[in-house]
Image (tube, helix red, strand yellow):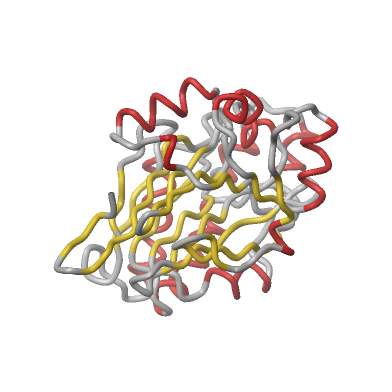
Length: 271
């Protein structure tokens, strides 16, 4: 059933799982609901939906950002249980076919050649520079005029990404690592270089530096996501972003609200 407040249908989003161990976000508006990524086991996703009193049978689509394991780990089993259409780029679909994720009944569609509106939710894909062919993010628009973006696994914020996420009210954005922790950590040099590259992940500072202009252009709810469990902490990510916003004259809980997506158990935000 659609959530209604003051006669207006509200959208809602829950980053149920976030980080290198798996990612999955629930989004709903009106009578439509969907998942972005199924990067944990199907059992975990179903438990997460149950804990939030959300019905998996009402899901109308699964949107996949890219084919790295932490974004598709539970997809094969989930599709066996629920024959839900999958939307992804042709490159991602090709990888999922090769890896045997789809079954004979699976329905999958090239998101870049699909209708812009998905039932009650508008869906627009944008490309990212991550080191996975066909990688990207999504902007979803709702009947109440608001928008949300899921924007993680970024090597850097390109002009394409920046243009796509400007004007959204609720922004799920990567704040993956603290550069100092990464450089002084135990990862092999090659892994550090990959993460720091333009095809790797977005650092706390790089994320924070984007936020003032995004808040100026309408971002109100900011969710820092895809934190590294080894090279970051929620406090570091939060403080870095808030410090840059304060320096630019923005006040928390007045101009914006900021939270950090936990590895699991993210709350529902109403938009």
